[in-house]
Length: 185
Image (cartoon, rainbow, N blue to C red):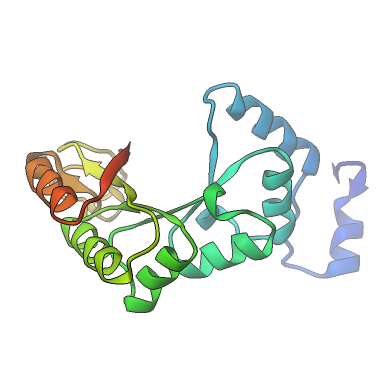
């Protein structure tokens, strides 16, 4: 058995097992197919933060969706610019995280009203950073093989309920921010 003309046994001998092997050829094919579907393509970095994969994404114009400030920092170290990164979460782990996003103009996709509020408070206090945010909406329905993996609906922890959009508007107005994106699973 071979992966890109290299015997699997040779890979195991050289690197030991277990070992992760990625096909650059297949990765590039997948990137090209996905890019045909949308003018902006984002890679969910939680799938793999391998630097070589990140650099291949960068070389092919794919942007990053990060779920932690650690992932944001890793993407920057791999060569991504702030405008190529979206921080998607339901919470900021701590005040340092929201300040890092503001200091570095990282676009935030907020998954809860609390996160919108926290970003707004920090934005107002900070006096700099992006006034534009995105929100993740829970449309009231979703799918998943269990309650823990459900991406929407009453069993999902993710997203601002569609019934709470007026509260989002109030927070945007209160903190002089702009909604520039909507995210749904």
